[in-house]
Length: 103
Image (tube, rainbow, N blue to C red; front, top):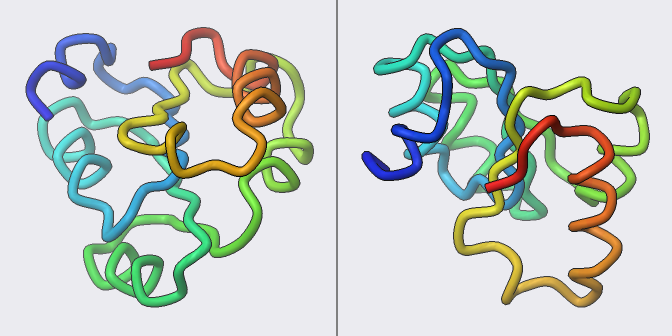
C-alpha cells in the first residue's frame, strides 16, 4: 500500500478496480485525502467498503468506466486485479481512457 501510495498525488480522484474490501482505498483516503471509488463484483467486498465509509460500486468494471468521460480520474489502480480478469485488454484500454495514469 505504501508503494502505491507514493504514486498517488494528494487529493487525487482515484478509481480502484477490483477494490476488494477497500483496504487500499481506505489507506489512500486516510494518507492522501483522495476522492475515490472502488469497483468489485463481489457484494460482500462492496459491503465492507461501504462499512469503511468508502464509495463503491458492485458490478462490471468495464461497464462502470464507460459512464465516465476521458481522463475523469487522476489515477486508476488495478492492484492484484489484471490476472483475475476474463478480458484484461478491454479493462486496461478503458482504464487508460478514463484515467490520467494507470497503476
